Length: 315
Length: 234
Image 1 (tube, each protein chain N blue to C red):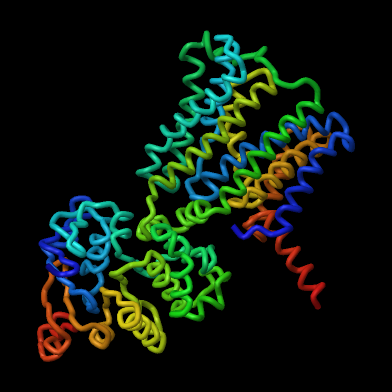
Image 2 (image 1 turned 120 degrees about the vertical axis):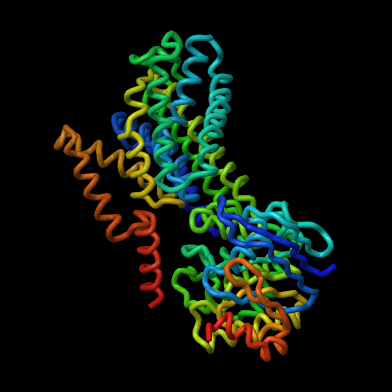
């Protein structure tokens, strides 16, 4: 795996930083962090699949939505305990992932992206028409059981979830499986020619991605306490996830964390100056500049900066 | 029965027939070259052996039928494949490229890696370099090395000299011969460069428009005008 002391130090510092944060920042900022944490989880889910294998998903809210809706419906409509509802939601999301997987075994490139987009749109239409007594139809659902009270609790809870998901995904992708998934993104037929089962590997990536999306979606809905289909199955939501991964650095897990935090706070801090959609011009501009000069994202900027520092100190 | 035996193989892309009724046999320890122009079906033939193309006919290796089996099963039986134009993973390091080849022979990863590095010392020096930044010759070495990582008994190499300078072609020829002489591999290559094929291989098959036209030892073919006619079009 090639683990070094600084890997442990970095993860340790990250954990300590998260633990101390409520002492340092205001409650309002903590609430922003909570949203950032969930965006991190969704970004990691996207990175596990698309960042590695090159199968660009435009429909991740489809998976997140299955997780969120399943858990919300089970707890609110059927009175099932949330401890049981969330694992069921995760399993149902993985089944949803399998359904998306089927076309993915035959098509790739922009067609795959379009199919996943279609899945998201389909889901958006379906939840409004099919059994609105369960899904709440166009209006969505409210009064869903929440798991935490107050900003500090919500922050610790989401941070813990995010940290566990982040570090396990990071470990996973440092194994041979991670190497093989990257290889699929670069040259699928050569992976096949080396005797690996591309189908099994892709299935694994889809399942891992769906697992994280379902988990994130379910916990997110139990944080918000409400669910609105228009906000969830929104193309802007998809773009926020993808841009977070790409700004941070795809296929690295660390990159999506940086990207999601950066994006959330950028949009939040711009709010007083640019309350409307103009904010998106700024983030579009930053993303554009970054892609032109460092397409591998902020993570690559940091690592190359670190290397330059080391070389200087050697001289 | 020969070590690798292909009997009346036809291969298809959709409905288009790319290979038609091809037969070929390779004995253990031989170096065989399949010569043909662009589009003759050389890569399709190797892809068919690896079970990556829709096909009819039978292929057996080491007395076991491999036609109709999955690629990963075929690799496990002991066939290593270095595909067309090296087919590497450009933004991965040399070592990671090699490791992708090691999935089917995990226990032997360390030994195989040492063997690859002894065969191509340049790869050991550039272990952490991304293959996107490497020269053609180095990429071919990575591609051959990756195929060796699965502990093959038979190595299939698609156009080992494509786009390489004559001096590098010689290096590749030397390493292919070493794989046979020192490591006991059987080697099948495809080539457009008939001269290279004749210096390296013992027997040659000429493939033209999906059909096997001529077959013989290098000695026989040197005195056979059909190869020159078929291939150089005089």
